[in-house]
Amino acid sequence: MITIAGAGVAGLACAYELARRGAAVTIYEAGAAPSDNLSSWFAGGMLAPWCEGETAEPEVVRLGQGAITWWEQITPVTKRGTLVVAPPRDRAELTRFARRTEAHRTVDSAEIATLEPALQGRFTSGLFFADEAHLDPRRALLDLTSTVQEMGVSILYDTPAPPTVDVDCRGMASSLPGLRPIRGEMAVIEAPEVEITRTLRLLHPRIPLYLVPRGDGVYMIGATMIESGAWTPITVRSLLELLGAAFALHPALAEASVIETGVGLRPAFDDNIPRLTHVGETTHVNGLYRHGFLIAPALATQLAQHFFQEHSDEHSRQRRTA
Image (cartoon, rainbow, N blue to C red; front, side):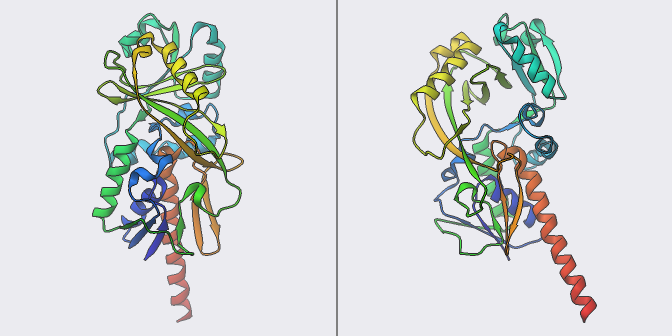
């Protein structure tokens, strides 16, 4: 039996990879439901490794490249790429973004209008990352929960983890040293008159915006990255900046209804690279920062390989000493 603390996206992904290799798995989850894992519940759901290369280390880009295929086994994935644009006054931001990323092509105003007719005449140039995708993180979390339960994984909600577990995926709630919280704030808006079909990123020197379609005229917009451990609701300043950036993307978004706001504290190491950390008898899967849905599959695969290699090595030692 392998025990896991935390049923967010990292814990569930680890359970999936372990269970599909034949392990018996139990997850301890202090919350009452998947929605209590706020960092996962309020995620953007962008499977965009090449765009993340603008600020992320090359290791993050590499680890994220298998995420689309992995998630397609679990939940619907929208494979329409990512479109990056900037207002004319911020053209230098687009040039900088292109220089720091890969796997994109430059698009002009005509192609932008072809990709997203709602943006016709609004931007003169952009970058299109055709191989990227997005998913609905809430549906993905629920689908992954159902999948692992069907595989025989036991999830004990409202149950704090015992003092020692095999795998700790509790983010900032873990006892792992070296983590810091990054506060991310988001809003969900409804704008039925605006039809956008893929993830958009609007570059701005102070607060870049991403907009992710959720279907039926609903969009998630985010997200701030603030070095803070405060669980307080979204601030007026952040909400105004997000909504102002959305209005700059398309004027009709000024008439959108704000139907939800949220805050998550995302765990990060000093170098912002997620990884497995072995402390005593526990392996920590942590530091996913803003890349939870993107990186969790790769870290979960690493974890499963570690456990089964360790089991194989122990079996070999026992045979040699028999």
